[in-house]
Length: 56
Image 1 (cartoon, one colour):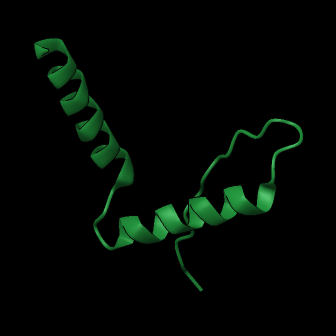
Image 2: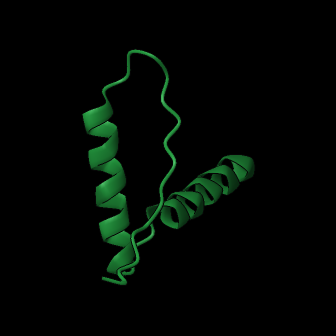
């Protein structure tokens, strides 16, 4: 079929809910296809918060 399938590695601790972890990974992958990268947004917000705390 020649279809590319994304490969995602999830590190899972014993006792974690696999269904919710897979669901979140799938949603994150879907958002990336639409051009929304949550990791980059989180990093920007975190750096902004740190910079504001240092000024105060």
